[in-house]
Amino acid sequence: MISNNHRKPAQSGAFILLEVILAVALFGMISVGFTAALQQIALGALRSGDEMRLQRMFETFLTEASKVAELEPGDFSIMTDENGVYYSREIEELELENMDGRALEGMFRVAIRAQWDSPGGDQERLVELIRYEPLYQNTR
Image (cartoon, rainbow, N blue to C red):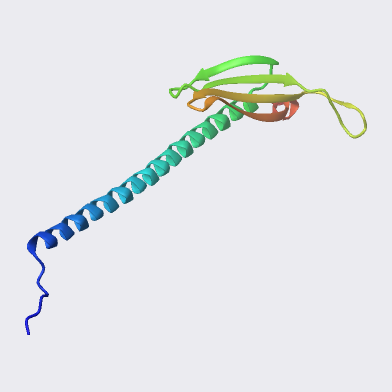
């Protein structure tokens, strides 16, 4: 009995070529997905770094404003950093009353504003501090 289990070389080569094409296509799809995921991770890391830098600047400017002996109401430009973020300070005197209805003098609102351009449009962030001025005055 003669068995016919042998394939012809042309049929065998065609299947190998098809397998190689499928493997390359699968590798390409996985590579594109992996690249997109890495790009999202890098973008998230950049945003996180920008957010931390912005937070540190806010803390610095608020600390600076809280240490000034006498606050003067008004709008003041602080600086523009190397990333193009423009910082400004707004100081206004507040008219507040205590529980007895007496005016609380020396209360100020200090606002630090950051403004910058981004691909999604103009961005703005604001932080505020309420300061009781007599608390920071040296009476000695």
